[in-house]
Length: 122
Ligand code: FES
Picture 1 (cartoon, rainbow, N blue to C red):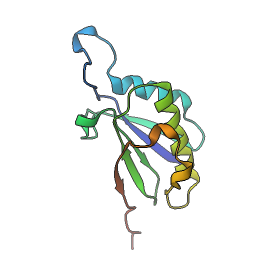
Picture 2: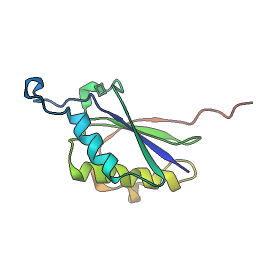
Picture 3: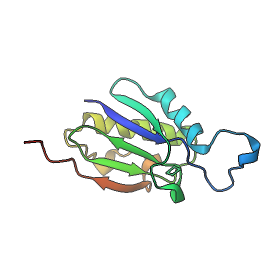
Picture 4: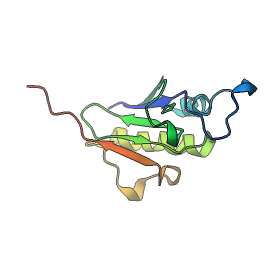
């Protein structure tokens, strides 16, 4: 089953300089994540996940599964690899729960919220 990584592309970390014309930290992280996704892991960008004070933020979601928001990432290769690896584990999990012992190191300490799946429609 597909797991989606929703990446906030307007996140800016402390020190980001608007005058420099550089991509936002969220755009930079999105590019690194998109380069590693594929197969069971798909990506999309949104502008603001309302977690601006702990940028950079992403959401991990799959139909009928637990979903998560993770934040406080810097736009680095390590962060992108950890996020995509975690999403791959989420995709193969029946419930969306991934045992802690399997969490990639770069996502540890970055979980912000967890949302239970919606009840099945009647
Ligand atoms: S700008 Fe990224 S969460 Fe608001």
